[in-house]
Image (tube, rainbow, N blue to C red; front, side):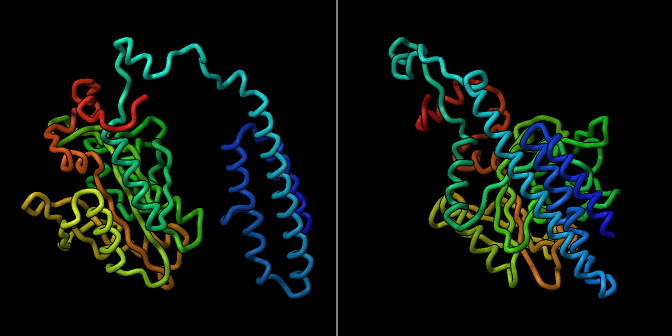
Length: 339
């Protein structure tokens, strides 16, 4: 065992030295000293060894882990220093470009913040005020994170080609922001309180209410004793901040494979009830897939279409306007930041 540990340490140190950038170094860190890393796995097995081996193996494993962690930090510092030294070539500003006011005076209109971007910024502020972290994940996902770990079986309709952009290597363009929930649970121990506000992709036929590129908010909270009441408070607070202080909400039972129980949430807006989002308590299977014990922890999750919320808030009738690039449409929202 001690020889194997020494070999594993040398392998990890070689991988650290070979890491060419930050993402590569993060991958090495996850593989060897992360929550489910190989050196961390050795430490978890020490208790099952014969008593006379536990002390030497435990000490050697801890020393190896510390050596690898120190090497990672040193390598990270070297990479940052190298990037900083190269800023003059990779990042620069054209100081001769006229400022926005001068361009406007010359008859050239400045840009405006896109209505979806504006709402995302507002939502980030609201969630941050409630103690949530903001996360994002890769647009190109694997089957496990997008479907399997979310309790979506192989024969589920969401896997059909009409819904999903599959790639030739077996990966796909993420169809929702829910994979970020799984990745967050894999990377961190509870309590986890986070939201992902990002772009997703569906193989849809375009019309006034369907786009193949749109935006979702995925919120989730995992801790001891989390209940539907906590979920209601968070969603009611969010919707009242965005839509109206007087907005009312109600839950109707519904089915989503990744929550149990699952609900549709309706809201009152401009005098009528309308369906707005799906939510529920995180399914025990999903917690297990994220490395969390469902007998100890519980959580809630919800998914909300950001494009639809912008349409509701501003009275937009065709979702295709958002990705259409028509400046006449976008300049209607010129009250935001210009530049």
